[in-house]
Image (cartoon, rainbow, N blue to C red):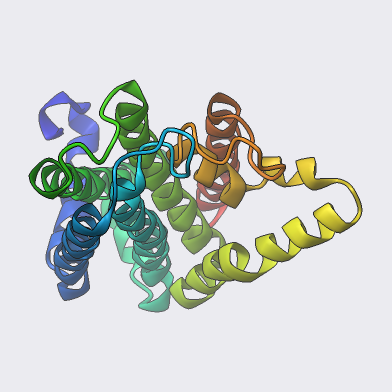
Length: 259
C-alpha cells in the first residue's frame, strides 16, 4: 500500500502504522477476532444440516459462524477506529502529531487509510478462516456461489465503513470512551428502540436508512427478504456509505478547523 501512495503522504502513513502495530491492544485484537471466527465457523459447520435455500441465512446454517465472525470484526473495527483516533486527545498527543504532519488533510487521510486498511486486513483473515472451516467441516452444507462471494464483499465493506465511522466519532467527540460508548449504544440500544417504535407507528421502512439496518443488509446478502427493517443490499450499501461519508467528512472538517 505504501508504494502506491503519494510520496508526501508516506511519512504520515508510516507514523500511523507504527502507532497501530506497537500497541498491545491492537495485537490482541488481531489475534482475538480470527480466533472467534475459527471457533464459531468450526462449530456451526460441524453442527449444521444440509443447506436450505428458503431459510435464513440464505447461504446455509453452516455459514452462521461466518456471520458471527463478521459481526465481531465489524463492531471491533468501529471500536478500533474510535480508540485510535480518540486516544490522540485522551493522551494529548494530537498537537505533537500535527507538528510533524502540519497538513491537516494528510494527517486525516493517513489516519483513515491506516484504520481502514487494518480493518480490511483483519476482516479478510476472518473470511479466509471461515471459508476454510466451511470447506473442511461443512462440505455440502452451504451455498457456494455468487451470493456467498457477495457476503464476503459486503463484510469487507461494512468493516471498512465502521472503522471509519468509529474513527470519525473519535475525532468528533475527542475521547475514545465516549466514541465507543456512542457507537455501541446506538447499535445495541438506540437503533433497536427506533425499530420497535417505527414498527408500532406503521413506519417500519424508516429503519432502512439507519446504519445498523444498512449493515445487516450489506452483509446478509439475500437473507431476511421479508423484513420491513432491511433494505435490499444495493440500497443498503449506498446508505452505509453515506453514513460513513457524513461522519468521516464531518470529522475531517473539524480537524481542519481546530485540533
